[in-house]
Length: 111
Length: 114
Image (cartoon, rainbow over all chains, first blue to last red; front, side, top):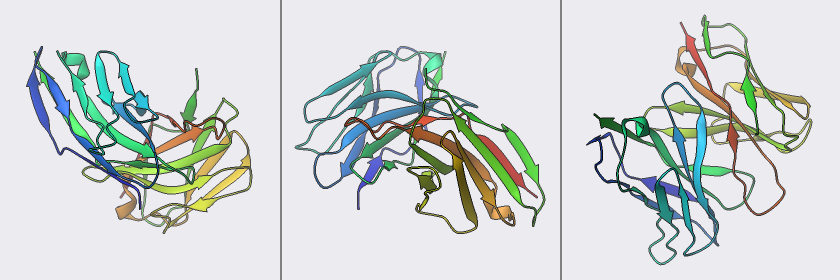
């Protein structure tokens, strides 16, 4: 079945450091890919998305490119802030109404 | 903006109690979902519904049931709560229209069963 594997955390960074969270997927066909973010005490929010190969999703300084050849959708940010401390989830949609989520990566940014 | 609300942010129940978690969405979405979130396990789908009175089992339906009597409301029921059901419960909704199936989440209910 469809699945997502993402980098395990936790990840701790200093402010202004670069962040990369790896995400790879297994799916038949051409899934849509998402990154969700969960800030402390809140539900999940959609951070960015991509629906086809070579699409780049971007939001709030984060970017991810849909790479069909490597079945990857890595999340990157060039300079993180304390407010980026959160749990990040990679997810894919292929069919059957459902999203498949990765296990989540906890990111802590220190001032 | 899509709004998904859940009836409680925190809930403490005793073993054996019947527990109702309510979810309401205001965007006229056809699809609604219940997940539980546990550290290291990500989100696991319990049940989903693609229409009023319709329901489908997700990956971990055991010990749970659901009800969807109105389009905007989707309830999760723990018939007899057990300590291994202590978790964060997240409700979500989506529309089947268009190619993108992004889901919109509520704030979550942290349930503790003692």
